[in-house]
Length: 306
Picture 1 (cartoon, rainbow, N blue to C red):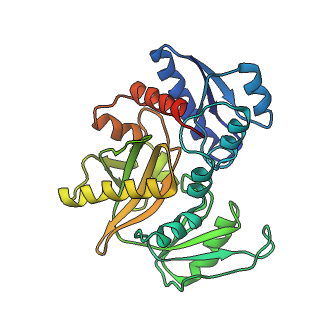
Picture 2: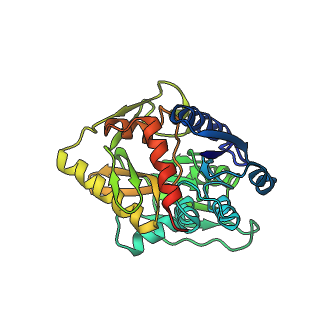
């Protein structure tokens, strides 16, 4: 089987995507598949035509990969691919839209405000909810905590917004919830399962870009330091979030367990897929080794009717 691994790409998460792609290529070699590396650029359609793959493994993160654009191109070309389709990908990459869907469906998520900045791709500033610090300021359509700031005092807001504007003109201002940060992997196609949850414990106290990608900066606990009933509630909520957005194949659902209960933060449709990334860690805890996980994702992609 010829598997085109789409990696690299044009987003700010290019370096992370290359690591994911290389890990997938190593797994494909172990599985006996022909893995073909494609560093995604503007000539992707031509590159795919030259390769003629049986299936594409999307190892891209962020814009032009995780947002439904590449998925749409693959559907036009008639090439099966791994992971979620166009609609779920586009919805999940937009944190504001995701939270609006959660709220409409009655799923718990922290209160938030939306800022649209004039002169940046049109629109005017709008605020949906009045918030007081502390809160988290994030670009709506960016991953890996890029452009994110923690705001403890109102006078810090302007600098946080300026940083977020470097990445997006739509900005999410979300109430900061004190508690345990939990991530739950979900895998499957017609029948989905929630993998063992992971508790994220950054040594700095905040899970930002440095905490995510600096070796030794964060501890990951399986199982989390929570009652078993709460752990099962986390898994159930992850399944609900995955289904609500229409995800397929895999997702990683981030949430916080605070004094008021469990609240959803966001859903990643293409989480990091190196052997030490969170979703593979969780799969391994469930008895699924990395090559088997990659094989399942490919099989589900081939079976999916787009």
